[in-house]
Image (cartoon, rainbow, N blue to C red):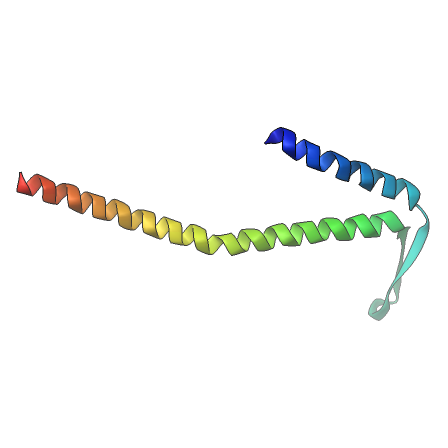
Length: 94
């Protein structure tokens, strides 16, 4: 699994580095309501936006998985309770 992770992420890393090397021209971003300009290389904005999207997506997936985790925990507690009741009933019947 670790090998597959490296196999998939290494070409992506190479593409990101090549993109950063080829897009070093400076651009100006106008923050309109704030009378403030940001001058930065194009690759910083592009890769930063991509990274932000990955972080938001990972957070969204984590948040979506919480419900399943809570349901699993609740069902696990119910199973443990029922197993203890079953063990008590077996002990009474013997």
